[in-house]
Image (cartoon, rainbow, N blue to C red):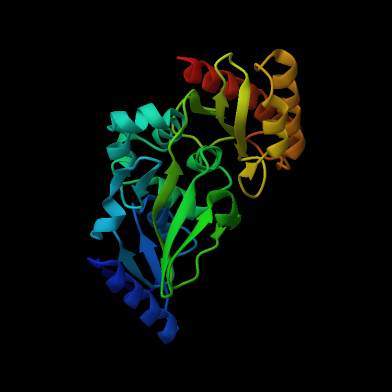
Length: 291
């Protein structure tokens, strides 16, 4: 194991300066939001020396802002804090369900949804939920801020679109319209604290008569990255989520999946399960939108 340094900048500018200095010096720096994934990496194969840049002291990364049209969730806010917000539960119940599935109560005291996203695991629970809710990453870098849709942010297994001089400051989510809600479901072999064999997030909007007028469907743990499944959304838009429409959406999710086979499940099994989860999550989202 190599040498480590730790720094906790108080401003965005200070954090960017530190990251740039390490890039220019050819040394490694890694951003810490919650640290729950980073510490696991350090104890496994990725234990080379680095500077750990803790962003929890940066004001903007701790902001939770409910605007008229969108909500901003700072990258350093722990899942435990988010789960205490009644407003977030009202706006994005599916996203909070996903956040609440990550680890134990103790882990959630540190873990963040932005960290879960940046870790870029194919089985990251919050990623499909963020995609379903049209989440956008707010990225700070030497040229200022840039924004990127969550479905474009994860580029592969354990990789994302950040340069070594950038970090995620937070996430923007458009506030749901009238009769709009979301849901997230996953399947795991054990009852607690396991990673998803398959996961599905659905957000949908309904007209006054219950017809679906907009939808987003995302799946996780069944491909190298979480996927936005547009064909699944198209299958339910214009319907009242009858069995025929739900079956088409299920088939679209199964068809979009490209899972592996391992000791936790075969590829065929994962394709089947992710379709079932899509149907069930869509029904939950519909019932919430109608309530």
